[in-house]
Image (cartoon, rainbow, N blue to C red; front, side, top):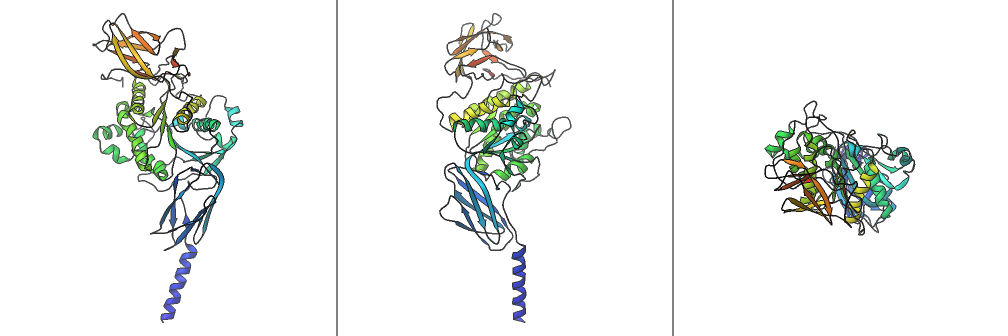
Length: 470
């Protein structure tokens, strides 16, 4: 009788092991790129009880072992300097093997449609750009659009080598960023694209962060209303498309979003930096976060300033967060097209930040002029900027889009003139000026640049209440 019970138990154990599965998140796959010089976490699941796994990467001298606990396992391995291709093998009751693995720089791309915008959708010089997109050291991982009410441990997706066929479907801004980095740094680049056109910032952050602040949750309640934006709810894109990636080390993040948050522009001063810091907390380190300021576009006849408020919130975020950078696009937009087609320059300007701040290229200017301070001098105001490079310049005979106001808070068009590294602003209608605004409208296409050809960001020197038309 005892022998029979033992035999049955052994047969059940063998059957369980035969049917057992070993698997890992989809972000671990052939052709993937892992962050160089890092402690990279490998993790996954197994249905085999009390299993011990052996992990061996072809750059490692010795294998490491880890035990499965309650179906879960994870282990950290050290990655070398950029190189490859390598192989990673995870062995247990079955073996997982990943080939053509590169070690390099991994960047996360997110936001809404302008980050999602591909060569297929339409960019400048599309045919030639697609034809020339052959670089096996650039890899793409696309997270398909999906949503979830709760944080997920895995997401769909697969790694692909950059070819004309794969590039044409991927984020154009992201590809041009990678191409520019590759011109200066001979390292593989992995791009993880997780974006959704029309999405608001609130959908890309934890629901609890929004709901804990009444002033945010009230505004966010409009997200799911027809006619406002895609039918997303707070947190659901974070849950499905970001949370599964938070254990995968990245060099930094690129972001292009904000158009949808015209619906609640004032809360963007809070939500945008809150999202950035929450992502950094989830990853466990303050990675670089570079983003694109909204381009000029005519959104509405009744409201001509909501996008300008979002831009101001973006500028505020850059100035107040460490390791954050902003690309200005007021010279490469299209007031009749919400999707400007010059993604080459968007990607290049994003890359300037990374090259200068993260990759040791010291001889380039990476930002356009940024408002620094003001000084009232009788009937004029003197504006000082950072990032002037070798000097300020105007593309045209006279500077445009400067406005000046007195204590009555009424802004009047102003004459503006470059004087060294400053701009002097005045108007005969304002004899005692107290504030200046520059390019502070949805459709503004100003002409102030630095000597590096990078445009100045819109700004305001006041903190007065702003009223929108909607």
